[in-house]
Length: 572
Image (cartoon, rainbow, N blue to C red; front, side):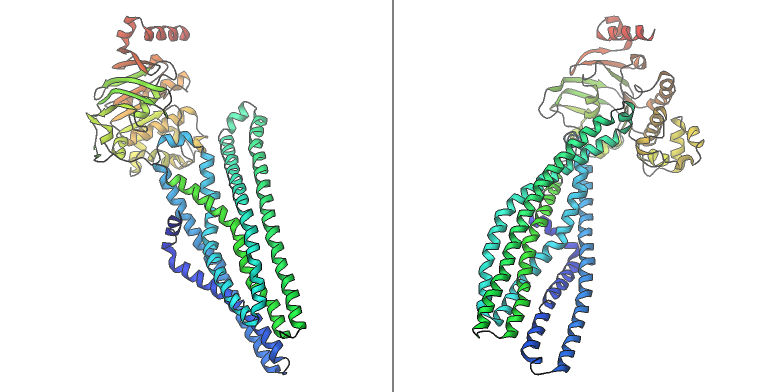
């Protein structure tokens, strides 16, 4: 873990070295004042060396100017280094998140992932800057100040040093409690973020159903957990700081009494005694810095552990020997495929089917039967539990994920559009497409005329998830995106089920154009949309129970015929 953390310093070693050098100089400059104080009290003032007093004072002022500049360097460039490391970690996390499989996002809430991307990395950044500074500089300061104090009076120095173990024992006893409390506090923040992300994303549903009060209650549950966890964390922190501060106060009492007795008995000079009292904080301050650093250390370490937890999550990988399939022909075969999510009940049970090049194959049946799961398995979003899926006779396990998915276009019921321009959303189908190709894709999707009616045309911003567009307009944009991609295989997963009949008829014309010349899998509840399919499979409880053409399935009088007659009666 430590080695991985240190690796993020490597690109910034020059800045890191400069920051550490500046911090050490700041620490060493701190000893100049007590040294000058001792010299003045013991020598310059008694001997009336007024000229040297002024020179020493001006020299001290000059040293403080240097320290001011060094403090600026440490505060500015030290934090810049931490931010750069934070940016690199954030970049690494984002890249890794893009590589994680569908299953990861089934198990992890978006808000909690966002919390790790922001809050945790901020704490790591602070640790990256202050950690080495506190550890290295404070350790050097303790050693240098101990040697300096010992030269003034060894006995007083040893008396102070004898108090340090008590300080360490108290901090060790309270450290674990504080660490656990802050970990629970951090987890509660991620719960709040998850609730907030969910509520904001669903704000229109909340307003439509007038359930703002329910959302507030759910948010307040997480908010209450945060308050409870944070209260416990601050209680532990209060005990930690109060205990350690008391011991440092004891230091001052010990020095005052012991030094006073030594001065009374003539065993120490007044100047030395005064310098020692002034200098004792040179020893105590870095000790306290190290102790107080525990809080930041716990925050940073906990954050880095959570960062590593995501980085270590198993990403999608091409199988050894996987090849680029190039432009696929489009033949698909499922060979005795079974599948389940996380060892739960099987969603698909020994499913076998063949789809010829250029065919339109429809999947129908009751909800939860496994139709959408098949659509997710063909692009290899999930690994099959058993059996195999073939594209052009090749097992998809032996095909690179990029080349496989380049050949597959998906139009779903739930369209996701980015908060960007219409042009950018269509370009998502093929980022290197020309403007003319974007326009041609929009025309084929029957959305060009609408786009041109907008004041900003293709540069129109459509809002988060395309909120400024109607359902039909969003669907046409998604179709334009697939036209631009020009895949060999097309998956239409309930592509028109959320649309009204009039809009569906208009969209269907675009879909018919899109399907031409491609192998197409259609998932539909409205059987009227799949009557012309080359083959239809009825799926129920993870198994194919019927398969054939529309006419054949009607003639058999089975489940398909029953579903069709029910929908026909409803339409009448």
